[in-house]
Image 1 (cartoon, rainbow, N blue to C red):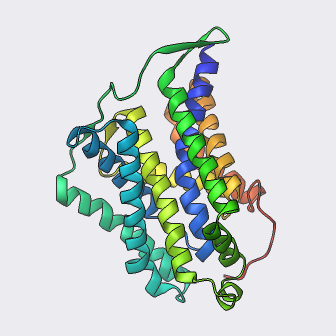
Image 2: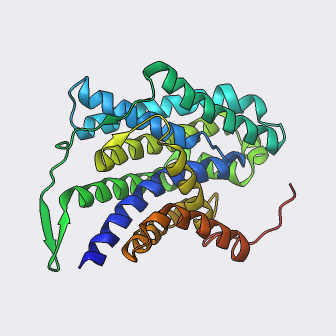
Length: 292
């Protein structure tokens, strides 16, 4: 019974990883950039949600929407200022810039508000216990999982059914050909950053609601784990990021259930090493050679 509860918790945590991983994989699919500042957008989203709830006295869902909108704008600003000038630069230059942006956001947040912890209100979502197959599960876990899955479904609809989604897929396939066909590549890339950052902002609010404590460096470890999830599913492939995040959450839950909770964080990086050795293209990726 306890194992079932751990699995539900693992899926809830995995859905948070999946939301963050979608931003990594979307940006990589379009511009072949690993945006290591993405975990810090997740942190900013958590704080925007926190202040929306505590200062503006909003409930969970309005705070979630405000955080998503603010992080979407923040993601576009990062792309236009830091990444757009390096569009034709080497991969290593863009990667170093991404790390620099990450450090700037973290230290900027510490400079603005200090490094102290904040705590989300514990009564933000209903916390009744629901019996499923004789196992008591918190309604909060199910609600968080439901919100995450709905956001993933909306993303799938945007990518496959809308004009901007078609433009994103075209640019991902061949940016030069898409440009010749009249697609505004710059706006499409900005839209990709906006959508990915909005999902990271949503993940930040969900994380704060579930784990209560937030702080300026909270995005480092979840951001790295979400990157592992994206690689696990196949970097650049949206369904792969979703599955990779959920799988990583389940793996961490099983490690904890086996009595190795101290090794839970290390499990993600063991998975990364194994994937890079035995299945470098990921679960959903195609095996193709690439010149670097």
